[in-house]
Length: 403
Image (cartoon, rainbow, N blue to C red):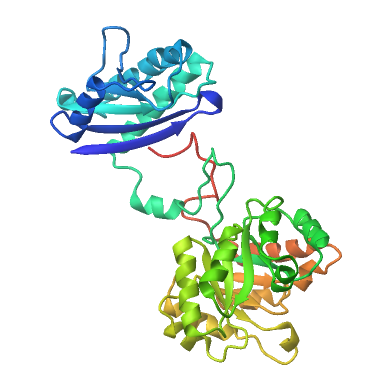
């Protein structure tokens, strides 16, 4: 038997990150414990946790430095505040009966400890490592996190060291701003003016891509780092190649035309899933979108019911297909496009649309920010009274996570 735990607490150079293993002395953790203590590694020398010299806690606990110890200044941080912090955390958990007293002579614990070379404040090193060790052990013994929490949080959380969000489409509805104009300066101005919202998607439209190429996506990342960016290539052939083009420029999604050959669409969806980006299929001019989807090996992540600009006055939107498409797979998202205003948006949302795609109403407006806010306000009205199971979006949870 062995259990695994992890915790990060604190901030700045003194931040603590610990990984732990708990297990029986005669099991794999006990073997790793003995091997680590008898086979020393330069710069990562293991040491027993002690409350004070000559007073280790039970279960016996081995500390392994994650960061190379280069000199005595580094060593003092490990053989000092970190060493006693880990030991006291273990002893307190025994006293609190989190660790059963009848197991203290049967179990051993291995704790990997991160100490930043620039850490200076011994009190913070102690406090953060004490708290992180207790939290990691509690999590291990309670078999946390729960798998449902992992699946819910994997597309929502932000890693504090990485510093930016990897956006995913988990919280519809969304406003997708279709950038179909061909002036880069104007596009940059619009992106800088639109309000910050997790419900906004940026679509790098086909005309814009034709003028500047897919490399423009990476350039836009400089001003829209956290945004979900869709690359609207409207792929008709060489599905694998075009997905790769979008992926290499950091697009979060790529669009194929539903008029493409079935083999192209199958390759397109497969390649997008393999690379971890979203696949959109645009159903503009496709006679029977539902039958097309049924013929695919795998469904795309998003289906676009798109009424083209040239057909807006003569063609009714096909929002009645939204339910049929969602009946194929409850995870599929449906986007609607084609002359949508803040007024007509409500009908689309009532019929189950997840993404409202808007171009000219925003990009050609005198005040793009105001136009965007009209749609976001409409979302608020549509979502009145709706709450998330786990609370607000994208918690920056360093100190506030569960045990």
